[in-house]
Length: 133
Image (cartoon, rainbow, N blue to C red; front, side, top):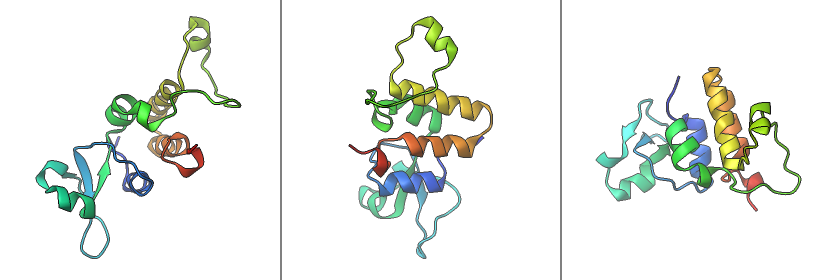
């Protein structure tokens, strides 16, 4: 399982204003492509980061835990519908949107559905233009 977001999702987040901190990034080649291996952000100066790097995020630690409230909505909107697992209903747990989305991503990753997890992140994250208020 890939621990970090793919180049595709990383670029979508980057191009749509995601400025969350990260230790890893994809490095832009002179021809406009990207090197395959991730680089450590701390080895680049601040000016280079802006121009040459697309930050990548640890899916579990960054997206689902550390920055979950910045990536996913923190309150339900009228008309939102979710598939709440029966265990959450029976426990009386008042689950917030960011918690629900994080659990869904974890569930998909546990089933080795990395692409579906990334698609789910993009479809439900606040950086997706269709989710901006």
